[in-house]
Amino acid sequence: MPIGQVQSNTDNESKLVATSGGSAANFAVWLATLQIETHLFARVGKGDGKKFAAEFKAKNVIAHLQEDQVLSTGRIVVLINGDNRTFFTDRGANQNLEVGVMPVEAFGDFLYISGYTVLSIGTEGTQKLMAMAKAHGMVTVCDPGSASFIRDYGAKYFLEAIEGADAIFPNLEEAQALTGEESPTRVADALHEKFPLVVVTLGKDGAYVRNPTTAELVPGVAAKVVDPTGAGDAFAAMFMRTILDGDVKAAEAARVACEFAAEAMEVIGGQPDSAESN
Image (cartoon, rainbow, N blue to C red):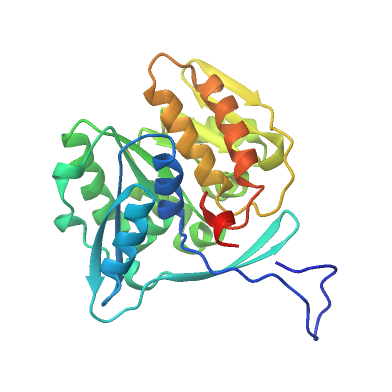
């Protein structure tokens, strides 16, 4: 994160922070703060399993970590400049995530799939994973994860991979990449043709909710933005937590989630304990 105006071709005074992260991991940690038993399925580099499992345990997340014998644990560099973020992503060991060895006894109310996972395991793996979840009565939810990766992968193929999901949580750029439409209303309508629940996050402008009974723009909540990384993960975690409470309408869940996401943007890093390490 630069301190002051960025100058090209020279040094820039910055604040550099190393934290654990990744979309699924961020979501899991945020969800665990909301008193929900949370399990994380991921793949790390050889020798990293115990270390990361212990770290997640301290955050009340039960991590089921496969160890890859060749690839290292995934890493991502995030450059933050105001509300803008640039990501340099190395998915590492997660590219080899093995769906078939996931402990189904850990399955619960819903399965949350990161778009990065879809890119790694492809259509066959994603469909197998969702079929396992549905066989155990789970709701299936997808966060598409990255507009640029969707464009590279192909929107048609990405949508085929997550066909049958019960809900999707794209941001506006991701929704545009998936549909070819532009406005929140049009992208949500297009996605709703494929998914029962669509929640398009709009940053400071809130979220657009579309389901069979709702087509509503939920306004955003003012925040002192320090780092927007992980805000979408926090939003989705609170949304799902609120829905799990019972008879709560989707628009109301989105309002609560917008408030939670605004708080998430006031700390550095994608997880709620990041501020404590600085």
